[in-house]
Length: 191
Image 1 (cartoon, helix red, strand yellow):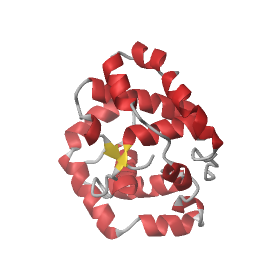
Image 2 (image 1 turned 90 degrees about the vertical axis):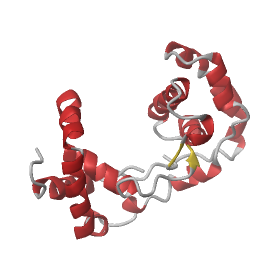
Image 3 (image 1 turned 135 degrees about the vertical axis):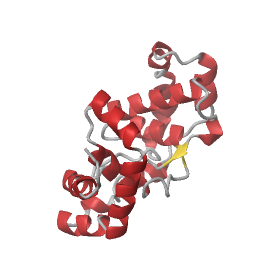
């Protein structure tokens, strides 16, 4: 889910400014369930050169994509993102609460060293990370039950930001290749 920049900035600012010691339009996606799904298998097969270049073995590649079909629920969800259906002020009001800010402040302190490293290495302020973490999963409370490989493959095949999701799919395959998660464990939100 893409979060409006103003909502992220508002939540990130609220979380970090009060924390002691803390340093678009909805995409239209063609339906993968339509006749386009006929090209899904050739699309997946065409990923192999990029996957191989990224250090993914043929065994991991084939195992992860075997029998995969596009997920029509993912394409439908791209058209139903709540933050695009109301004024930004209403969205921010619903996204920012005292409890969310308090939790963000506590997490900013708990993970202070990690945030310091991320800020130093990547230049991403902790407030932005905390805001995304809060907005996307309620700080990890709602991780989603979608098959991440299938969702990313669907979005790479039929999405508005195909190149982005293609790279994300290759990264997910690297997670499998490096045994960080098993194929049945790689679950997440639809996007």
